Length: 76
Image (tube, rainbow, N blue to C red; front, side, top):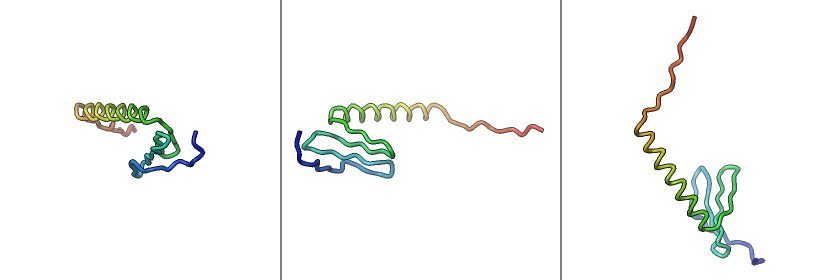
């Protein structure tokens, strides 16, 4: 383990969070609100693929079904 501190590089950031990497350690840092994950590059790539697939499936489901809010009725 290196005693040298990590040099973080931004991979992406937005209002939801940020993703940084340290090329020396091979670690990806995912910061999302109060959650912080440290993943090696392979774990991060697997997580990214999983999230992308889930997002694609969710989009397909939303196209098939029209979501409507239940109507409230006033009972007297």
